[in-house]
Every structure is written in C-alpha cells, then in structure tokens.
Image 1 (cartoon, rainbow, N blue to C red):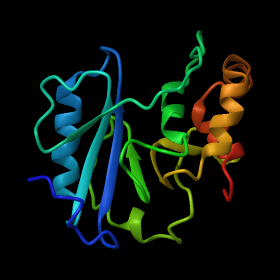
Image 2 (cartoon, helix red, strand yellow):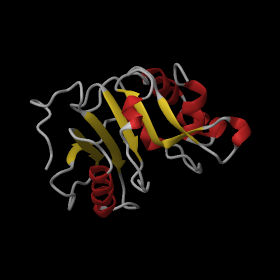
Image 3 (cartoon, rainbow, N blue to C red):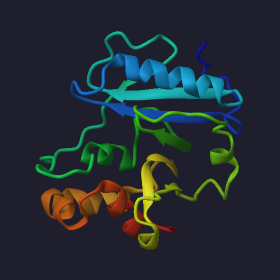
Length: 181
C-alpha cells in the first residue's frame, strides 16, 4: 500500500522516482519496477512516476505529470535527455532526497544503502563500468536532492542540441557538470 507522505516520518521516508514518456515503455514497466522496489527497500517509502500517461499504472504508484521543460529535445542522440525535466527547482509535490530509477533496471538487492551513503545534499551516481578510465557515472540509478541540479537544467536549456552533441549521453553531462561530483 502507498504511504500517506503527509503523515509519514519524512526523515526516514525514502522516495523513489521514475519517468515514463511516450510509448516505448508501457505501464507494466512502472508496475514491475514498483514491485522490485517494494521487495528491496525498508519502509516507509514513496514511489512516484512522472508520466504523460498514467493509464494502467498500479494504484500504489503515485503518478504525477511530467515536469514542463520548454525546449526541443535533441535528436539523433543516444542519451535520454527527457530526464532533464527532473533537474528543475521543483519536482511536482516532491521535496527532499530522491532516488531515480530507469524503468528498465532490475533490482536484485536492497536499495537502502543509496539513502545511507554520504550526506543528503550529495548527488550519488552509480558507477558505469562501460568505460572504466573515464570514471563515468550512471544515471539509470542516481540519488539527488530535489532542486540541487538546477544549474544542469539551465545549461541544458540554453543549448539542448549542442549539449547532446558534445556529451552524447545525459549521464556524461551529469557526471561532468553536477555540483559536488
């Protein structure tokens, strides 16, 4: 059952977010992700899906509208730049620390350590083993404080296609530009 975030102990509340847009990943991805999260986290937790279509998403998942970002998304790039919608000062009614998960991740162990590592203001990126010498973070699973990545969103909004052309992947852009990483 979803928790009532207005009455939960916000200090211990773990917030998981994902983003679902377009038709590539249907509601069943959000539903499965919720199931994996619920089996691999110590409550209380809140699971929020920012989406353009909440049809068939299970009731335990809080669906909120995709945050607005008035830019033309880059084309002919491998990165998933719509994630940049999550980097703003506000993120629906969500505040505090969140753990972002891509819809296609597979969770096989506890997510609790993501909320225990470092201090709440830290941006925690998963290690990306694809290019070990590059020290690249992975944005398929990362923790951040809502509002802490505004500078990245502003850089991206100023030249979305230029940023995508330069960095190719949003995770490279995040790794190279997020404060404190």
